[in-house]
View 1 (cartoon, helix red, strand yellow):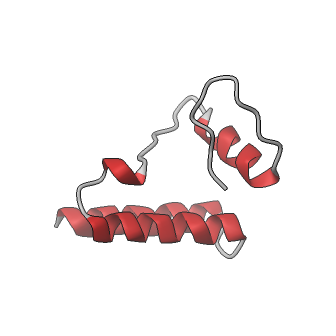
View 2 (cartoon, one colour):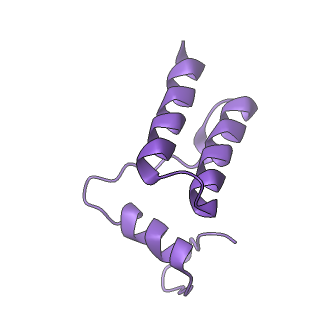
Length: 75
């Protein structure tokens, strides 16, 4: 499953709808894995997103995990 990146595309699935809802928040900041500098960081970000999408991690837990991975990459 992927999040559509084409204007006007509609996918009716609860996970995609939740992601869309979050991305449309006025204060949302979006970092797609391909914009990050290292492959290992990309993997950590994708693992966090996948856990969230699978329902094994809350949004708050996922954001903390991803932020920690980004912070570690910049150290």
